[in-house]
Image 1 (cartoon, rainbow, N blue to C red):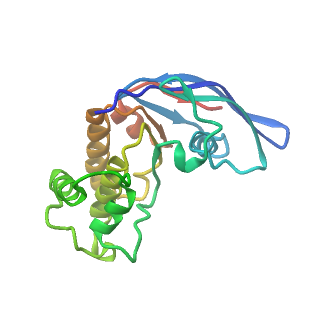
Image 2: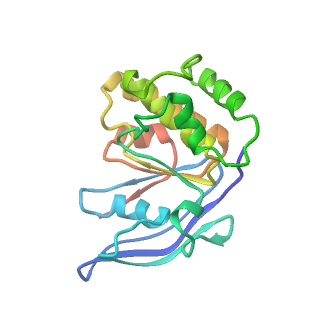
Length: 209
């Protein structure tokens, strides 16, 4: 279980001379901060800045601290920030287990056991050798979540990961994701247009104007 803390200090992002946002916040272990705002307000740009792949066309400043360490100077792959997007983005040429194994730290021991145990935990026992193309939307979302957790991140970013699911499945996957992230003690930032997502997350809400 993680006990990480994510802090954004004076994070500012501008485009074309216009400031899109300024954010100061602290997200503790297992907490979920929801960021809401209209299209173009900079929600996804904020996540890109934290993760380390904000496009050069944006001007940005401010620090992103994970457990007191400023990660802004680190390459994206070294920041240990997990992401979930609208699409599961599973590798089509790898099996379910292959997708999960790819994300795990190189020094992780007993990978096969961890994968089988993880699949059982999310209700997909025996799916190790399945082709991702044969999964339903809900099953693919579950695999994407497990892949994130097995990558051992210190913080998590959610970029409207439920927006393409139908209403019933959305509620089911949303509950699963939030429960797992809270149980893992991971500080999380959720970007969404949906008030129901924010209410289910149960944490503070930061609204961008």
